[in-house]
Length: 286
Image (cartoon, rainbow, N blue to C red; front, top):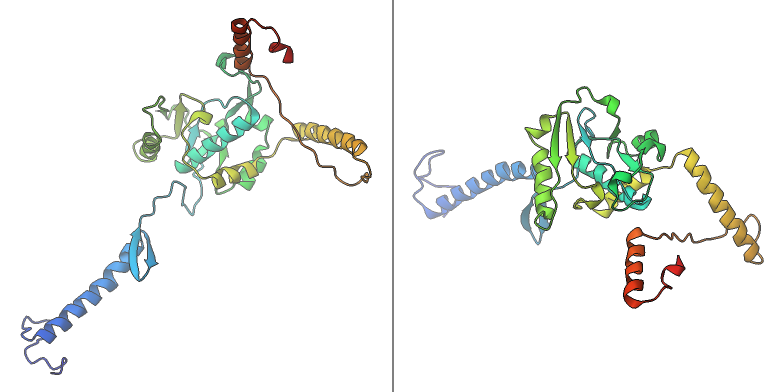
């Protein structure tokens, strides 16, 4: 039977008496639906081909995907960043990435010029731009993260607080849900979101290492500190040239910088060990 010669088939009609004609009609309907619906879905999420099977993959990235970059009129304020410089760099990057997720400019945070561990009241704050180059950071990280100054604020009272949770019950999932909640209205309508509670180093981590690396690449020490660092490195290499025989003066000498420090908690622990063991030599190492 000729499939295209369906006597009882009326175009856009209702008579489909033969089985082949019904099959043709169903095939046409399926093709029309496929051509209409599939492009619509792919506009919202990716389509991945695996052995001729199409799977819809939701686009659920924690990073900002805006072609316009970070908003410069919405801000995030974080607590003072504390502890050693390496910890402060990690905490600063985490604050930057949090601001990025919220699509906000991070207000230039205070770092710490002292190394107290638990005595938070004794911490000596120091402005970010006294340690790292502010303009250089924004130039290199342009479009990825953004630093702002408090003078950029138009209304210092237009602030909403975000209280960071703590304890074992405050899971990574709850922390992430909180951030997502504050990225929408009504919280997103405020000019500034102020995070209160523990310092950023203790926040839950939601970002890949490569995002941290991008922030670190944008950090550059101010000239005053950089010059002092160069002096130390130069002296180390001078000593190395004298020790390593046969090295040319112009040839760079490799070196290893060992960072040693004594934590106050460690000293207390050793003192208690001395008392319990009735010895007095542990602290002689210090």
